[in-house]
Amino acid sequence: MATSMTRFTFFAVLICSFAVILGNKMASAQCAGDMQGLMQECARYVQKSGPMIQPSAGCCGVVKNVDLPCVCSHITTEVEGVISMEKAAFIAQACGKPLARGAHCGSYVVPGK
Image (cartoon, rainbow, N blue to C red; front, side):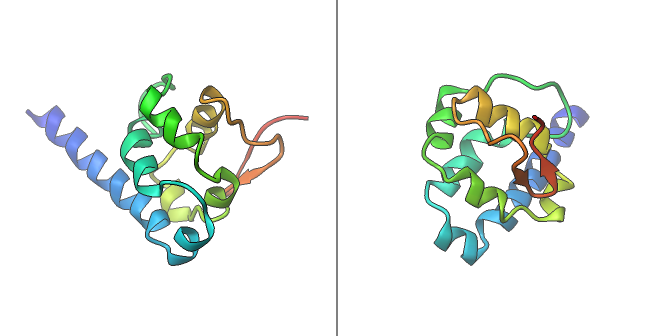
């Protein structure tokens, strides 16, 4: 029971953190794609705790239609406190839409030469 409550609390915090990004009028107005779908389909794959896991087809479907560089430009330090930016970059790669090497996603810099 305590484990499921902890997971629920963490997921609620994660959703709220995504909402900080996605609720930003500038990001919503400037970034193409389904931001609500991104939050709903992919939140579980970018949690700081746990291993990197392959995203679902639903998550990838949304990722492929979102302007990821634009979303990355609106990542705040509050969001980075809850979301693993390394996992976010992994999800983009796994979905066939990798972030460019050296690109910034919040304060995270995509590794590469």
